[in-house]
Length: 219
Image (tube, rainbow, N blue to C red; front, side, top):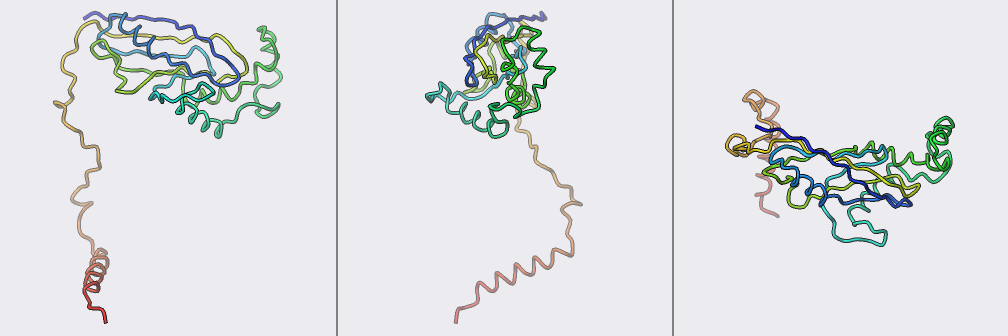
């Protein structure tokens, strides 16, 4: 059985001034199909610490901020949890040493380090998603899209997304676990846990009395 690994780098351009949601579904599906891998996984990973990868439904409706409604709902929630960086000293980061490091690596100004909100949001969402490949197709369900989210809004900049496809070029046979039976994951109580206790009598007697009272004729 041949095992294959394919890696591709997607170059993107985020707009700044507001977080950017890049829909990269078409590109990831194309990479998987061209890889020759029939069964395996595809891992989509951000190269950056202020960016995330998300698998979610496409919301169709787009507002004046060029965001799908579901994306803007998500952004509204994140702004409540982690407010946009708008005032100096709003967060501990960046400190003076980090700001100096930015100047050392030729950042255009201290303001480019004021992206603490992007770093924290990336931590919440994570920087990668892994999906299963079945018979040469990505198994994302009926409505899933793959989004690369750039939370950093201090400036427009180029971004990189890494896609790694791993798997076999051959069939894997029957995938059904236990012939496809529906698993019962609900708690199964033992006979001891369901056994009668004297304390039940009060509730049972009370219920019986209540039922009897309902049948008493009104005066």
